[in-house]
Image (cartoon, rainbow over all chains, first blue to last red):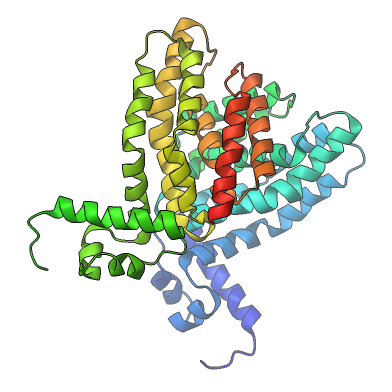
Length: 217
Length: 217
């Protein structure tokens, strides 16, 4: 393989093109060949040198999409004007309402046909979202008395799993109505554990994202 | 390929050998070649004619292991001496305590390295366990007043997902202590939704199965 003096530029170019095509045509309707055809002479080998599969491309595209707004989410963890439960509520609302979610749901991958994508989302939820975003807030809520939990690690995992995986309409190809009902049952589950987090705004936003996914798939 | 007059006998022979090796050596430490070597002259092609991958073999081995005891579980749904919540409790206890679970946990596959196995378990949980085992009981409990739920389909999914996937120590390679804590949080979640199902016997059994898995992997 020819040496590439600017691998980062190549990666960015690939992600630009892949990201644009995933948004325009949807992930399932975009082939690696489509991406090559839009890369102006870059070879298949050059793509596979950086990304082993279309799943890896989507992971990288999504990570780049979320990078900026994830930093804002981390900022919530550091705010001094909110207690634990308020931070949890703000984190949920901000994560759902950030505009980049429209793009994520527009790519509309079929997790059913992509076990590797599914596994990657599930393990990222348990190994990254739960310990790095949710757990520190739960610990803070326990310390300030706004959250009661005996096993914060497990509670963080449960909440993350239900919110990121089960309620995600892309994973089980849910309708707006099904997603709305899941959200209501999630709310009931949370309230039963003393966590009043979900509000009407979040529910309406979840319906909106589900509608975007259903139109795009 | 030579025609086989007795395909069912061939399938059973393959499953006998695969099942025995998965139990003796563990799923991860058994190769397709190991299975062929123990099949007395059957070719690789003959196995792949019936099973496309080692994952499919494990699915079939597990299905056959569970077949008999699953019929007993279905019998619980038809009992006249139990109300809805009692049936849910009995179903959970019977499912956990049946001896075949020892063999299931002894095969100890690494779901982390097998996205297809993970996807198959997740979708089976949502598309089979929830609607066919849990949902009818929840509906019955709503009718007899022992269970309160506004969205029975979603509640059945949530319970099945948490019990079958999240608490399953094979999926996240959990220790006995971690699994025990998950079970306690699951109990708290259920009680918060008015469902008193879990008891000490089930928790002890879950620890036992986790220990079997941890020794076998």
